[in-house]
Image 1: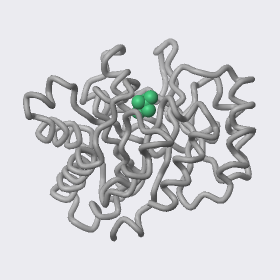
Image 2 (image 1 turned 60 degrees about the vertical axis):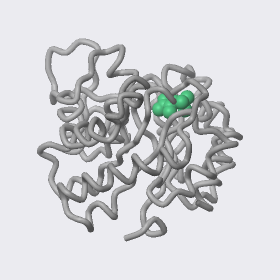
Image 3 (image 1 turned 90 degrees about the vertical axis):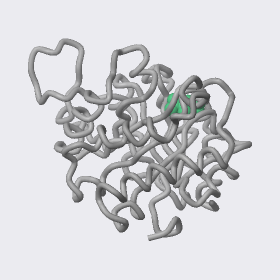
Image 4 (image 1 turned 120 degrees about the horizontal axis):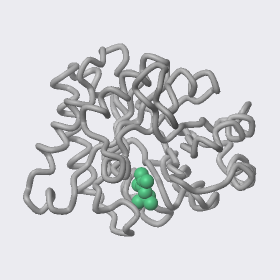
Length: 256
Ligand code: PEP
């Protein structure tokens, strides 16, 4: 399966932005602008916006995602949200292991794996984020590091479950910095991700996997990044908060 046959997914990560009221306005603006998209469009919204997003997106081509999920099924985990709770609400995707969670909330490769498995068990599609820091890139360990992150994240994930996994290559130095990886850098690491998945699950599974790039993707640079053979979509932070910019990226994926 080559790029044309893989599912391109453009996912917005709203991070901690937009009240439920504001979320409603943003989706009202966005939905008509992406209704003819040829790729999957996802908005990963704050937990407090999930209900309004699910109501607004019902009957549209916009899918709703959460930004985190706890790995236990239920119990004394004050403040946490389980995969079953998200699935019951109608959530389809969930971002797992975003670098901001790794940096500020003590997320590790092991907890990323536990969250990914919990999400899959509940029928959610995890968008598993991996990527190197600037120091790691400068030390020349990007590929080893990303291979390790992918291997640990997918530990215990079956070949059948892999069909619901999305991997997002997000170099930490490019997130929210305005400094985008070059299209060649993005391609190189996305291809390395596909290669390690091939080693784990076989070539066919790897060819079917959606691998996104994320890190300051915007209306100006999206087309070049998304044209690369192993870049199947994007995880977009800042530019997903402006409907018209996000719609341009969706359009670029449609053509890419
Ligand atoms: C992100 O939050 O995953 C992200 C890529 O952010 P930004 O597009 O703002 O760099």
